[in-house]
Amino acid sequence: MTVRTPVFLLVWLVISAAVFAGSLALGNDYIFFAGYVVLQYVVLGTAWNILGGYCGYVNFGSAAFFALGAYSSVAIYKLITENDFYRMPIPVLMLIGGLVSGVVGFGMGYLTLRLRGAFFAIATLALAVVLQTLVVNWDFVGGSRGAYIIRPEQIEPIGNYIRYLFLLMMVLAVAGITIARLIEHSRLGYGFASIRDDELAAEAAGVPTLRLKLIATTISGALMGMAGAPFPYYIGYLQPSSTFGLDYAVNSIAMPLIGGTTSWVGPLIGALLLGSLQQIATVTISSAVNLLIVGCLLVIFVIIAPNGIVGLVHTYLQRKPEDFVGRRRVEAEMPGRVP
Amino acid sequence: MSMAEGASMASTAANSAAARALLQVDNVGKRFGGFVALENISLSVPAGERLGLIGPNGSGKSTLVNCICGTLRNEQGTVHFAGQKLDGLQAHQRTHLGLARSFQLPRPFVSLTLADNIRIPLLYTVARRRGSHHTAHEIEERCAKLLNEVGLGEKARRLPRDLTQVEMRKLELARAMAAEPKLLIADEAMAGLTHSEIEDILSLLVRLNEQGVTIILIEHIMSAVMSFSRRLVVLVSGRKIADGRPEEVMRDPEVERAYLGQ
Image 1 (tube, rainbow over the protein chains, first blue to last red):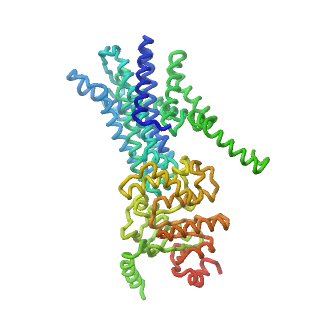
Image 2 (image 1 turned 60 degrees about the vertical axis):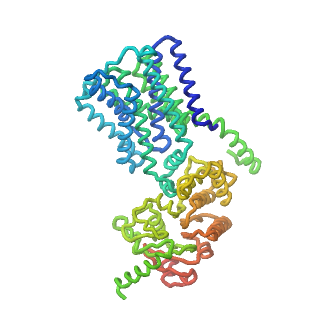
């Protein structure tokens, strides 16, 4: 059950390498194009879950953190690449995007974490609107017209540039789930869980709740920003209305909820499932169906499996035998009293 | 004696007492809008004391606890604990200093097993205080030992939703005990329990007191308060109206009138 972190990391790196090799073998670069989006959602879902699932603070502003990462890449592109023809390596852009979003996450946390429940959610939504307004009116990064990023066709020795972006996003996804798992099994994870369950009792038990929540908003924001940083290079033309789009906010909430919010597995499963479904629907039906799929699945899951797929599996695997034993004991003591 | 003289005498006495007392509450006042919840409460609790705090519903008992523990901020007065001024410290910092409380209505961490409920104060208070971390194994042992003490050892891997009300209150106490406090405030830990259950919790508290933990017991059940307390404090409408040996306090006509009815 408890695999050591280096082993965990190694296993996932091997799986990633296998997936990458498999995709290469298929010989169709569209796989990378679609897979990139799915992996991006793995990161976004995992990042959202660190604050939303572990601490219980629902963030509706995922798109804002994602867009911050994307726009910091655009700003650097405009600032350096267009003038000096020096191309900042994408991993560096990811670090910068993560830094910017992490700082904003910290700031947002500091301003809003005294709010609870719906009020916090509304505040994060407000943050997204404010940031979008800022970007729309900031001419340097393209304003409402959007910004063009010219990416190289090829990169040595991988080939098509999209493969490189896919690979980077895969590494980030592995890093994301490793961080999430590390948190879960650490002192920090227990602290987060106590905040989610009862903040007053957590304080009384000695948990510095504000500090922990700030750590959560910072990590969560930074991961979202890192996921956003390569996006301009992926899409080629970045537009505020789509970068701050509802899709990102809704998907990064829906995926952990459908997968299950209490462990790192949930967002991973949710993102792989929902992300792939959306990609398939985009090709076979229309990209407009995407949010419809999310909506329907969310309704179904809220009704039949409020704890997500992980919760569902957990119920069937672990609780069942225990409950059964309990039931039998009660039945023996008080015949006919068990409903 | 004028009010000012009384206050200055009280504060002189308080200053000298603060050196000895574990908990020193001086002239604490708390308002909610126009409603005065606490008015000039002063209280000195020496180490090792078994103090009963009683009063009718709405008399300010829980508000006082909340002001002492940092859940609420008192507008007036000061609280000293173990020689340190608590004003401005957050609740978790006060817990780190050795002040623990159980809640009137149990507030378990519902998604964590009982063992993990106990683990939180061990990880965040005890580990920090000693300046060194327990090994994972030591923490497991501590969790098991504490749950055994309150008779919940067999349910260590269960979730709080599987517990009865009584067990929930025992978990609440065990979690407060896990922080290894110098002062434990048990806020109505026995409401709604049967006689034997009350006995269980009382003997647990007495044992804890014998190990050197100072205890403040807030309770409505008079038999429990009378058998436990060495000293009794009575709050009525946010004011302290009596403080002394339990039998004497109960004979006090003002207490009889205000608390027990005429």
